[in-house]
Image 1 (cartoon, rainbow, N blue to C red):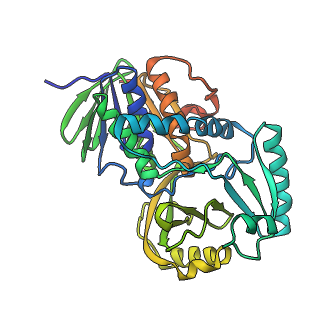
Image 2 (image 1 turned 90 degrees about the vertical axis):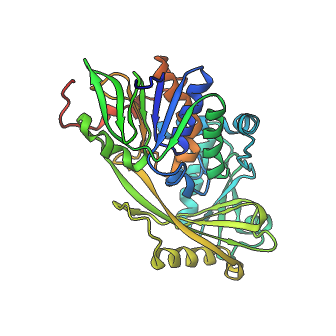
Length: 378
């Protein structure tokens, strides 16, 4: 006899974990399936930046979603620590978006004003003020946006915190279980077929990152998504070189505990190849040394790559399938999967329950840009 669940989540990354956790908190019996190891794709490769203001200019629906999610981390850190014992290593020491040219300086002044008009904290620091705050930074830096509310977490720990907390609440989590197809009846989902057999539910959430589109093709949807490889490396120093997260147009440096610094990330579209290249790491090294010259003496730790899901319009998909009731989709978060995980978990749990989310998600609806290739109700 096939097991029936209140909800099935497909994908064991940070957003799948966040959704499972939020559903479990609401008393649902949840099954989460991951075709590989948990947190083995983009979530495990991320540096953990919470750059709502550093990456976004203070306008548009994605910024509203991002800043709403950012406010959730403080309580979430305590919540997940209590439920799972995992410390997500939340650091709220602000972020510096550095300017190395006059054009960047002018652009950042504009962005600062936009953030202030939205009620956010943002200020301009001169080159001298920046180096007073972070002495290891290069003399080539002419100034920076200081974004006090942007922080960082340990991405891998955040994802595991969600997953372990969901498990503690009774969710069933399975690795190496791949979904092959969906079961439908009268325009509504009834379950899934996997390499371990069928599992039944009238609510299924697909959150498979860059692999979501392939899985959804059989349902007649061709989402406008594509994979983007991001290569990163990490080093260690005896004494910490940085206290603030550093962000530029060419690379970022994220200081972690124990003198560790993560440097990333390349942007290589339309590939699922996770190999780390000499060219990619060399480019990151040169950019990092330009910002922090003394990083050249740091001890090498390692390099890796992750595949991030991007959409044609840069906005994630959050919503219900337009052809099948009960089939929900959460993908396309690109570089903001860690930042958006708390709000994604809450929003998708609301949709599964048939509730209106606390924030307008109309801009992220699944049918906004899809091609309906074969929407035949089954």
